[in-house]
Image (cartoon, rainbow, N blue to C red; front, side, top):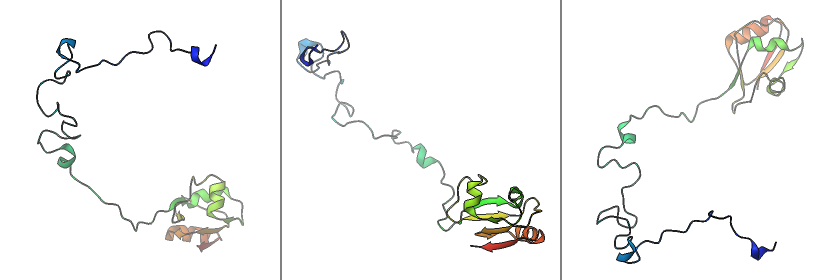
Amino acid sequence: MKMQELSPAPNSKKGVKRVGRGLGSGRGKTSCRGENGQNKRSGGGPRPLFEGGQMPLMRRLPKRGFHNMFEKIYSIINVSDLEVFDEGTVVTAELLKQKRILNKIEKDGVKVLGNGNLTKKLTVKANKFSSAAVDKITKAGGSIEEA
């Protein structure tokens, strides 16, 4: 088999219908576009989402809310999540991610909340702590370090 002998499979190629080639062709004069009007013209027809002069759906719906560009976004853990570590461990964001307690560290770091109990003496390094979390970590004999 040679390159010049290759051909497409039978009936796989269909010719393009030639329109506008004389009145006797059956597809002449208006070339299947009908009579005069906006859709007959080249590039004619209304723009997308135009509803014939009716107020479009996107303008009928109310706008709600806003995005606060100064919002702080923290990865959140609770004091009860720290129970998995051994006594005397220095808990950091990287260690939490390595132990799969956190999926990802958000742009403003880690915040520790006070839900649950802690019985082990740990040093916890985070960007922010709730007051309940500070109380529970210090009562267990641990310490906190804000980064």
